[in-house]
Image (tube, rainbow, N blue to C red; front, top):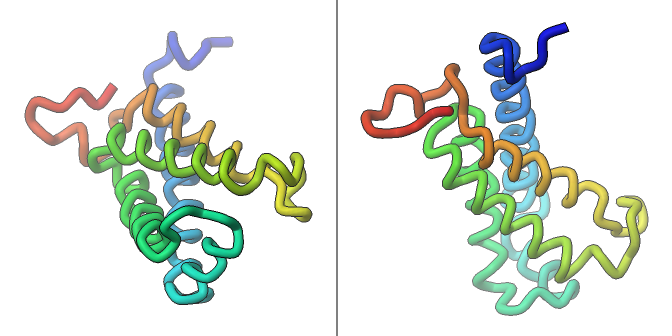
Length: 142
């Protein structure tokens, strides 16, 4: 059986699937912060969770998650957005979720860790061949 490293088509498929799924999840969470919870509700929740400068951080995070998620789906400036989204999730992990343990139903870190890991892998591997990045001159799409 060929591994992704030896099979360009398999690598392209893996990069595309991971990038689109992780991007969708981030975009969905950003959308939720804006439109389900509202920005005011998100600011209040961040404040209750002890996030510093919640009134500044909440809209930045919500916007990053929507814009970054869509960018990952399309494969636009993929590595930059993947690094920013990884940092976002690591911040959430250590500032909010680590003290609650692993499981998400008690506020734990399993989801933010999975999203951080997925975004980090996208940052390391790049967008792949099926991406807008591939067509930007001077960009390495990996």
